Image (tube, rainbow, N blue to C red):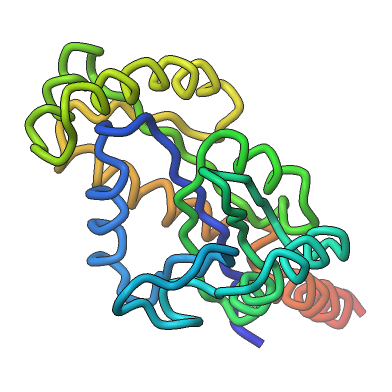
Amino acid sequence: MSDRRGLLIILSSPSGAGKSTLARRLMDWDPTLSFSVSATTRAPREGEVDGQHYHFVDEPKFKDMVIQGEMLEHAHVFGNFYGSPSEPVRKAIETGRDVLFDVDWQGEVQIRNSSLASHSLSIFILPPSIKELRARLEGRGQDDAATIAKRMQKSWDEISHWGSYDYVLINDDLEETAQRLITIVEATRQRRNQQPGLLNHVRKLQAEFEEGSE
């Protein structure tokens, strides 16, 4: 057994707040971190590998997994189902490996209500301002004006759920925010319930104390 249990690390933010960049910084800091591989009912795209990019399943199989409680979270997006199978995450936690989740607030709520909730750590990333959020979206050069407008409309709904997260970081400086994120993960790894060997150690101390008092 590992000397600690793994963490289920949830990162959420409105689009453009820097979540993906911060996730990469976290993985650069600890290469043993991995993203949860989602299941989806959509067809594979060119170059996508089953089990690496996604677990590709048909709709009846996906719905059965949901009914059987085998999904930590799931959603219906643009005509397809997406979800996070629980068993790979459970195994990772048992062997002391941390798993990253890039989900929205609805996914965070579902994970919070799952059987692995006690090993979860949720962090919401806020932009320094709405003006800066728009500038970042425009600066990426990935979306047209209409798409950016839709993302901006959705951003406030996402931001309004910040209060349900364990930690909230304002990403006004990438380097400082990345360091704060690392500090949070380091500290949470030491949480009592993440250390399976603590109880036996305390029992050992108690035995030594009782032997010494005889």
